[in-house]
Structures are given as C-alpha cells and as structure tokens.
Image (cartoon, rainbow, N blue to C red; front, side):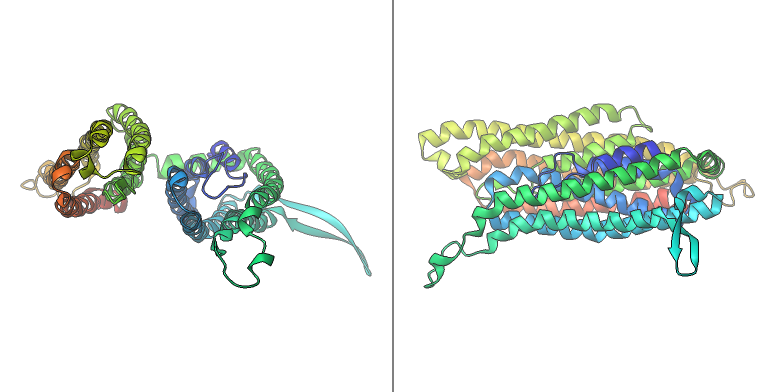
Length: 460
C-alpha cells in the first residue's frame, strides 16, 4: 500500500521554514507521499486527485528550495515576494490535497470494509440521563489538525518577512518613537519557528501513529495489493502513461526555465532550475531505459556547476559589465573566468537536454508497442505495426525539431559570452530563438501525449 513511504514523507513536513529555507526539504516528503499513494490511488477518484496535487506540490516546493540561491543577492522586499508567492501556491494545492487524501481514504475504507481507516475509538460520557458511549473518528480530527498545522506553518513563514514593508526612512515627526520592525525579525524567526516546531511534533506523532495503525490492518494491505495487481499492474501501458505524463510536464518546465533572463549581468534563472527538472525526468525514465543513469549524473553535475558559476560571476558583474572587459585590463582578467565557466555551464545544460531527448525517444518507442490499434485484427490490409511506427515517427519528428531549436538557442548562449562584449544587443536574437525553442519543446511534449500516452491511458 505504500504506507512506509507515506510515513517517511510525513517526517519531512513537520519542521518550520525560515522564509524559503527548509532544513528538511518539503519536496522530498511530497515525492515520498506521492510514491506511497500511487498504488492505492487507483481505488478512489479522490486519491487520484490527491496524487496529482501532491505532485504539483513537490514541483512548487522543489523550486522554492532552489530559490535559496537568490537570498544573498536580493533585497528584503524581494525575499518577501518570493515567500508570499510560494506560500499562496502551496496553500492553493496543499489544502485540497489534504481533504482529498482523507476523503479518498474513507472511500477506500468503505470499498474494502476496513474500519481502521476511520480510526474509531469509543469513549464513555456522562449525561443527565446516564452514561452513554460516544464514537469518535480520530481520522477526521487528524484531517482538521493537519489543515490547521499547514496554515500555521505557512503564516509563520510569511509574518517575519512582512517587516520589510516598514519604511526604511520615515521623515515624519513621530519617526523617532517607532520601533524598527526589522530588528524584531530574528526574534520572530525564533518564536514562530518554536511554535511551529512544537505543533509540528504533535502533528507528526499523531500522523505517524495513524499510519502505523493502518499498516497493522492486513485486510487493507491485502485488498489494496490485490486490486492493484489485478486492475493496474496487468496494464503496463496504463502504468507507462501515468508515469510518462510527469516526464512530459517536467521536460516542458525544464525548457521554459532554461530561458536566460539577465539582471545586472546575472541570469535570474540559473541552470540549476532546469537541471532539477531534468533530474526528476531521468529518475522517472530509469525503469524504462538504463541510459537514464548517465543523465542523472549529468544533471547533478550541471546543477552543481550552475551554483558554483554564480560565485564566479557575482564578483565580476557587481563591478563591471561584459563590455568593460574590452576596455579595462582588470575586467578582462576577471572576465576570462566568467566566460569559460559560463560557456561550460551552457554546454552542460545542452548535453543534459540532448541526452534526455535520446532517452525519452527510446522510452516512447518501447511504449508504442502497448498501443492496441482498433480494427487491425479484422483488416489484414491494415498493419498495426505500421500505425505504431507512424505514431512514433510523428513524436520523433517533433522532438528532433525541438532539439534543433534548443541546440541553436544554447549554442547562442555559449557564444554570447564572446559576442556580447562587442555586440550587447545580441541578447535580442538569443531571446527570440529561446521563445521558439520553448514553443517547439512544449509542442513536442503535447504531441507525444496526444499520439501515444493519451491512447494508452484511455485504451484506444
């Protein structure tokens, strides 16, 4: 049933967040919970909805974790903006996900006749008419407590950052009597963090106890495993469609986040962001093609190098522009390292995208074998294999088109470290090509879904 994964995932969610800093990254917890819900979700529409919401939460919190790299170089108001955006997004998906998980669990409990899901206890209560037995559903109480805890955790992350809204320079006559709220921020971190931690430990204890009690219900485990084996695992095409839809989504986001947007010479979207999306893509592709393993390693190297390259570029662009390297000797010496590291970073992301497309096309080719072509068994002149090959070639042509555009864009980014020294307007051409590349990549992923994975999911 995946309860062990859910139990492990819960552990990553109980701790407080300091703005976007998370000691136990939430996205790891959400990925574990997603994996734990996967098998059981086929028994309930609510759990399917929860599974999709948890996946979106994993992506949102993964980007939030990566955004930590911006903190040393941003203002307090920008940090507030980051925290507020992620708080709104996480709340939008977390609250419906919590409700869907519990409602879906109740549906499974009814379907398999497992009362353990409701976690019912009976207590005796004295009334004017005598002692009566009261039935309490602890699962429903846990649902309400979970919602309360997540709201508290979100509010506690946002409140200290609101101190950035106080005017830095107040020229009014009463300004000398005002308390600078920014000075209170460290204490707010401590007090609110301690409050969240205390409530989080209580929530973790209750949630872990509930999951452990479910693990002891043999009827629940056996019923879920039997249904999954008979109705889901026996359909490899359906399994492939569900997993590969995530890959299509991730590759599209990786392409979108690879667009270079510079601010004072620095890329606002460092390549660690698409590297994270590509890493997750390779992770899902691993069961279908062992060639995904080198891609995992390559994406990790790309992400690490992207972070390291920031520390090379920041000292230079804090004092100079790319054009200054042509006029000043000291700038020219510093820019040599900036140019080499920048070119290598974009070469690594180019290699990562190239390899993910190779592994993706291999997986698609293998998955087309699961497509049943209606009518082929009654019409000898109609070749099912030829139709499958036609569908694969349609996907392949779109992927090749996207790969060519992506290569052109990333090669232009590699060249920009040299060309922009003499032609600073070069970024316009690069940006135009990047838009074409993103459009082609999204078109390729949508085409793969319509031609192959929609057919597998809906069995036609």
